[in-house]
Amino acid sequence: MAGDWLAARRTEVAADRILDAAGDLFTKKEAATVGMHEIASAAGCSRATLYRYFENRDALYTAYVHRESYRLYREMTEQITSIVDPRERLIEGMLSSLRNVRHSPALASWFATTQRPIGGEMAEQSEVIKALTEAFVFSLGPDDSHSVEHRARWLVRVMTSLLVFPGHDEADERSMLEEFVVPIVLPAQATQ
Image (cartoon, rainbow, N blue to C red; front, side):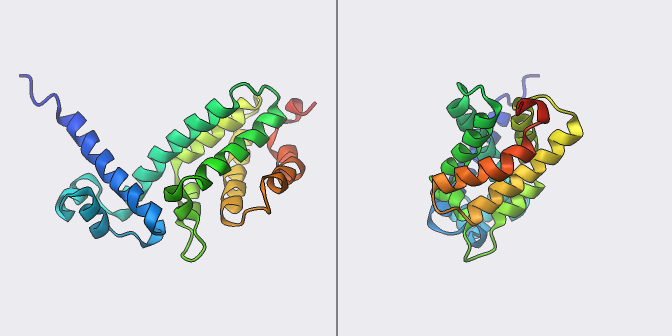
């Protein structure tokens, strides 16, 4: 009994096509204003088909944010792979992530200030963002799991704050990260 061995792949391709269409809309409009009808039209499917893959707008938004979070994490880790010093790794990792979000019109729309910045809500609630940020914090130097979790949660809030209320320029943000983030996020043994 072979079954339809391509069914899972078709589902994945269809879901990706829908998320790609949503991403295209997010480049034109703030993410908070994009509705399911618009996404279905942009993806070339009916709303019924759209709801077969994503039960509601929150599920679609979550899937989009998780997919992009994995992509951004890969990009950031590639950009800082040669940096060994934990202090510089933390700063460059954060600046790289901020740059990558800001250079993506689709992702930048999640932090628009004319509507509620739903990117902050998603960042706080996402288990994927939590896990990726904890992995990054742990990569800076071993620490107990509670400290890693706590520092990662605070780091997500700092990143969200900088995306909604950016510094004057990258040098200003670097200075803030050096002064206020490094002493809190790095484990004590990593700064010695």
